[in-house]
Every structure is written in C-alpha cells, then in structure tokens.
Length: 315
Image (cartoon, rainbow, N blue to C red; front, side, top):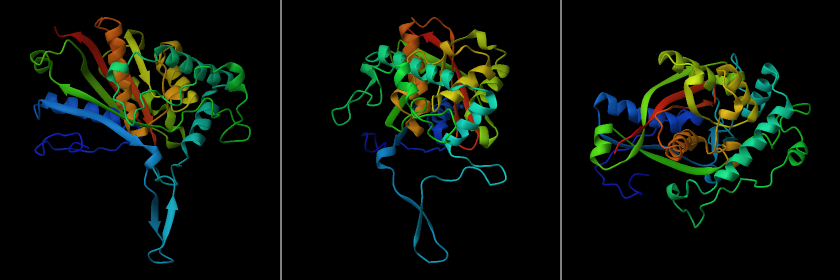
C-alpha cells in the first residue's frame, strides 16, 4: 500500500489486525509511537475490500491437498462460544432487552443523519474509479420500509437487514504527529490524543465489548460520560450500539451525529479509522471548542477498543 501510494522505498509499513477494531488500533499505535519518541510522522488507518476478498480454505487431512473452504476465521474456542456476528447481535438484543422498534428507530436515525451530512466530508474523499458517494445510503429510508424486513438470523429474532450494517469497501488514512510538528507544518486544527483502552469480553455478547472499553477509558481519565461532547461508536448492528449506549450511560441521540455504518456500510478494517475521521470533521464544524471526543467499537471474539481525544486549535 505504501509503495503503491508513491511513498519512498525507505518508508516502512506495518500491518496490525484486530478485526473490526484494526483501523482505530492503528491510529492509537501511531499515537503511542509519537508519545514514546519512536517516530515523528505516521500515516495510520485501515482498509477493507469485501468485494475482492480472497477465498479462504483449510487443508483437508482426509484428502491431502484438497481445500475446505470457509467464510470466516474462528475467533474463540468452542468452550467460550464463537457465534457469527448476526447471532451475537441477537444475543445482545435478547440479553439487554433491546426491542425491534428501538433498533429500527436507531437505524432510521443513522440513515437520516448520514443523508443530511452527505457532502460534508467531500474535501476529504479521494475518488476511486470515479465514485465518491456512499452506495448503501438510503435517502428515503422510512419506518414503514424498516418494518417490512424479516428477521435475518433467527426466525423469531429482532435483528434484520434494515437494522444491520452492509459489508463495504473503504480505506481511511490519517496523519499522526506531535502538536509541535503539526504547528511547524502549518496545520490549523487537530484532535489531540489523550488515551485509549482495550478489553476482552464474552464472545457470545461481542457487540458490547466496546462499551466496557469506554468505561475503562473514562475511569482512567477520571471522566464521566456527560463530559464527552462527541461520540463515534461503530454501528455493526443497531442492537449493539443501543445496548452499549445503555451500559455507558449516554443518550443514543448523542452518538454518531453524522450517521454511521448502518447507513454507509461497515468496511471492517477501515471502520475504526473512519470514526476518528468523523470526529475530526465534527470538531471542525463546531469550531474546535476544546471538548472531549470518544471513538469506540467492538470486534470479533469479544474485544473492545476505545480512544479519547480533545480538539485543539494550532494556529
């Protein structure tokens, strides 16, 4: 990726993998490297191309050399349970009592907010193949349309295609450096990194691991949820966002002010970096008021990542 982008051959690259949390963890790692003095400038982010993902297969022992194709890697042993994401979302909805109507209402909020925000990040988007618009955004999403969707994972379930994200292709990259370097280079606004937290949770309820990470992060910074001005929480499923909001103690109306993955899709490896990009744009639109922002998401296997930032004026 670095060489295709035209960076000098002397510039090294590093790939990290924490599934859906990879993009945010890449940004956090770059921030930690700057803090430690291990480097001054980093490009950090994530990429996913679901539409061109390679086929994956195990080698069969019964027929040497023959492939046993599979759709996803395992993330937990049988003793812990390793449900598919949709089943895990149903588990969360059932365990935390997130009704279908509430899930559909949140999905509608996401589409409407994303529709209103369309174009706000146009200056940050690079055209790929002539395309610059999100293909999954439904400008005319309505309660009646959402009500027509049948349960997607269990016959009597509440999680549907309407209140779940779509797979997506995307790439997001951010510049990470020190405040001093940013000022010297002429940057005028930035998000200042203040800390992060990562935790593991029950794989069967993987969707709320991000909430546990948020609560750890807030405790470490001696903050309460009401001190956070802007929240970005990945919307793999409406059920997990709503359950997480309840666990954190934040109103759902305060999360994802420009919509989220329920509207524009979930490019797994890129989504965490997209949360940071969304926060940066929101801070610019609000005049960099110095408020706190949090980006968080849950990942396969029951892992959660969260990071805290404050907006700063550099010029």
